Image 1 (cartoon, helix red, strand yellow):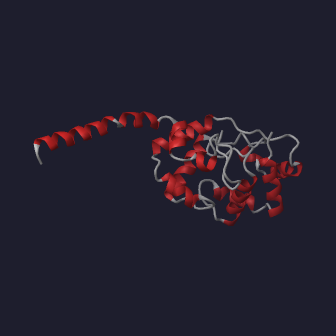
Image 2 (cartoon, helix red, strand yellow):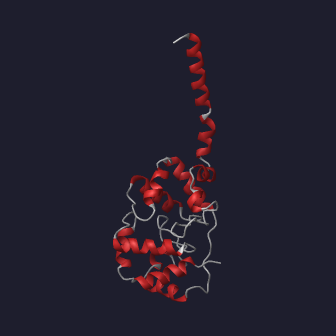
Image 3 (tube, helix red, strand yellow):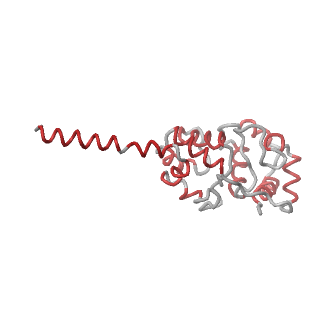
Length: 200
């Protein structure tokens, strides 16, 4: 290689390395990462307006819970629902970026459940002991790695209950949930999902 070509190559590499500065800075910006990693395409720009009701709303969710779901989808530990499609997206997101995205999602406001919605579902939510882990209002879970449930899409909430009961979803705290869901029939799940999804 000639000296001129070598200098040009080194200069090009130097410029490329220098250009990483903004990328590293961007890694700490969860809102930007949510856009650049294409999360908005399915979960909505506001993380509430999903493209399909089978996709979850993410705004205001517990950071620890969101972070664990991203890691479980990336590793293949979580395999239910749309996880297969999500896996290719998560392959482009490293641990630091996941943390930033989860932090940003947790900072957003959630849709609040309507007080007059799906009364039967509200009763079932309490009688089936859902309150023990997810809180009486379904927004104040016992631990930060348990999800907030109110304002969630009906179809998504129902699918998760069904998948946990059948064993199709087995990541995270699903083992503990499986015993609870064994006490809930399909009609009851629908009513609970209806109450959870109702929002102002």
